[in-house]
Image 1 (cartoon, rainbow, N blue to C red):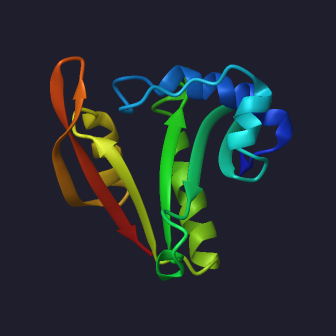
Image 2: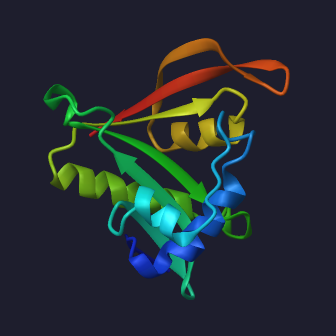
Length: 157
């Protein structure tokens, strides 16, 4: 397995993975890309870390500054997805370690994320990787007729 920043050639594989994993169970707004061009417009080369196995993207870790304010440039917000065929193989943890190392080298002091309260598997993964709950927006989303909390989690470098 190779972990690196994404290339233009990864777009098709990344798009397929994101279309597969970003569902009502993992995000309040389903994410779906129709074309590689649309995907690359929102996700240019180098904008995400990828785990590649046999030429196929098995995992993606996106990261960006949460705001354009200079006062929060020490913070990165992240999202992570692993193809179901490759889950429980340590890929997400290796992607997370890659980001932590890269962030530290670039003076980042805090990693943050948002996760649906119903996504217990993701919450356990984040806690296992040193993240803690910073806050909760209660009943933030109405998904399939049920209210779901939005949990904010953080990791300090």
